[in-house]
Length: 333
Image (cartoon, rainbow, N blue to C red; front, side):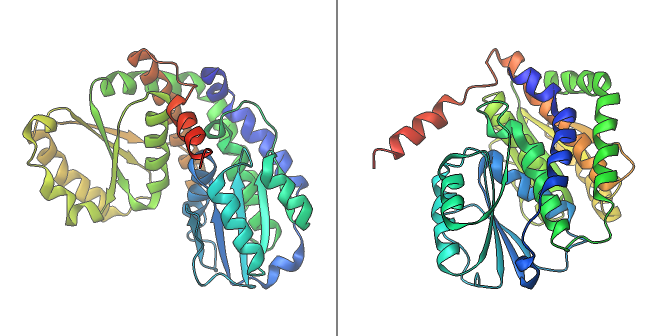
């Protein structure tokens, strides 16, 4: 199941573009002064990616909330976008009720559930997503791309050739599918019985988080992330203890052509430090003709790597039984 979902990601992007073009969010959102996207897990990571992709394009503050509580500044001039694939994420539902009570403009991105029902009752604009599997993390193309289209359609991304870049991106992934899978399989083999330490320029921190989440959920394996340059001011000093763990670490640099040059230099300086502790270092370079294209290239490549790592670990990448157990226990209280 997961193999087919990852394989179909370029086509999902294409369908998400078509859906995004049909959206007609209300123009009342034009009076907003800040944006808060509420979402967790596979639904929330799409907002993180949008935040990174739009960092140099949006003129309004944009934040992602992954909690029951919304920031104090949220008011009638805030656009709240609730993203929950299932529509039943309890943190998101709690936050949306608060947002409506504070008179914020609220949009929803969901496939149904309680969120869709609440949105219909309150007359909230909703981007209704198709259901391809009961697996929120496998619908990232829909949540991310539709969020981008919403922002553009309310006038916040007026000069970005969004459709063109997205189209070029999914075509690139489709054309390079065999090459990407080969790279991913090789990468996964290097992560077996290791603790992956994922590092990158803070510019693409959401990609690190996504890869970590996919390793966690698909491969059932622990993983760690940190970003440059911040890790140079703290984490680097920690590369001493526990000594037995250091040789079990596999460092992976995710790099794009948009990284800050000084970050590249910092990575070069740190590489021999890691190797001196018997940790392996792998560099994963993005490909593409735009920042968006490079981001989706790395996203797809690392999704495949998490799948192949699951095979190496001898586990089914689709089920997340411990999360289902957690939700059932929470539902009792």
